[in-house]
Image 1 (cartoon, rainbow, N blue to C red):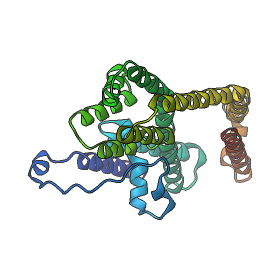
Image 2 (cartoon, helix red, strand yellow):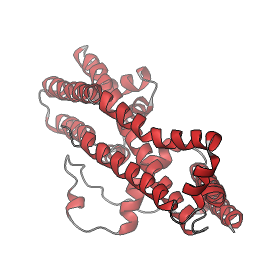
Image 3 (cartoon, helix red, strand yellow):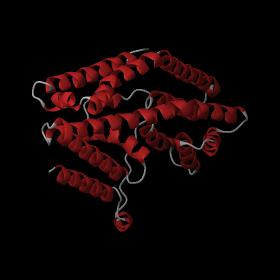
Length: 302
């Protein structure tokens, strides 16, 4: 049964992968759709204050992860879920002997949510790490006398990362004469972070009305650098507690591994006897609860 479900997940991943690649003939013959008037990006997402369809919210959450995974994103996700489901089914059949369908499905869902959040956090961390450097390069170009469009293109040529490619794309579209509203609106959808939205609002205001762009960018750079320094300080101050928690959480599992070689009868009692399984559930539940509390405490530090 577990093998069949894993094959079904792999088939769904292949179907999504093929669906994500449009047919070039159909794309060529499809008539051009009228362009809708795009709204100005704001530093505060006003749409989030009202109700929006569920599929739009899922699309906003999914696009950055699919972008980060690159070509064959659905195939990679399907293979990951199939691997987790198969490994969980094997461990459950060999050791836990719980529900053969419910436990692997729950673990696969939890792994999917964890992986999705991990990719989102990694993308945001990469943005926060490289965005101040992009602003520094852009401000240097503006100080040297370049225009806003030229300075954006210069940043794209200088930086070889995701932010550099985005700046290069924005600069090229502006150079071709595309309306700034449409260009920056698409860019904000790819980087929906407050710092980037504030940067776009500042650039748009300067392009339409003028102003002291260098002073505003200097203040934004200082805020971003201070925030990055504070995050590093927080991780340094909590590193000892986090490492201690990981070591303490690994001790029961390591002790059970030692029992497997020294006293296998006691391990068999914990794993398979009806009374001993309560000990196993207590160990797993207490570890999960303790790690969750520590994770919430670390995230709550400001």
